[in-house]
Length: 400
Image (cartoon, rainbow, N blue to C red):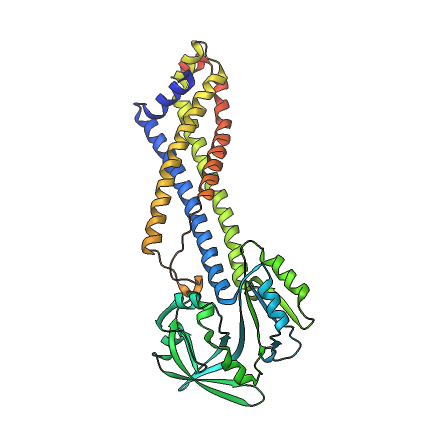
């Protein structure tokens, strides 16, 4: 251990001065809270984004192929399920899975209560594992007259399993379908739960008088190795003139815009926490330097150079920052672990699309935040360290 390290360690952890100890504790606490808030903020933002995106992509696919809408009644528009298109989708290496779908706006009525809904019909090879995972009661639909509804709708209409509901469709003439509730789901995204009822595509084919191979479109689940924008452009280049592909981002723009705002919020939080931690360290170092002015004067009397004394206090700051980072990381990881296991922090699902605060830790984020915070704080404390050059041995002795 060299001279600067030895003196810095004694100043940091072996000082007997009560005021110095208090300043050290305040500095360490500030650093610890700052890094803990930054780690938790990014973990929550990442958790929100991945949870909502995963649910939306499982619900609607990464990309949807549908008919170009020229009419006033888009849910009646269909594309033809041609063999050439099906073969092209099967052979596309960027596609992991696809299924047929159709949707139609209707009115759900029970007694005097009515609500607009969207009936979504799925083909036989739909993503059943996702719908099974969000099912809270009952089972998935198996016949053309069976539906699954959200927990929100079930509570509003006081609907139990095996109850029949009437859905009204306003086309050229009013059409009514009596459908049996066989399952209740909870996606955790209020915007979907309030509007969608899930069924077989055969119901919508029947209402729209479509033929066997006429469908609303395809839900495409992209292979992770191919970006969805690239796959969408590839599909649009090969589709017929009356069909087009669009990403889930374009289908639900409000949700993805909200998720993009979370990134901005995260950046603001990180900048503010770095400023607070840096100012905290500057203040602490200034007080420690002033309190140690007699020591600085003595070191200068013994022949120590300004740069050597600056290194002592920079090492001192480095020790405090590192110690604070370790404590802050421990706090953040502990809180994250508790939240992941217990979901103790709840949310209003109506406003936040989910019922609890999601946490997704990324070790790369943690490493970048720690390294960034360490360098940012050290750079900020370089400025007050130049105060040492203004302290002379005689002034230090007089000041003391």
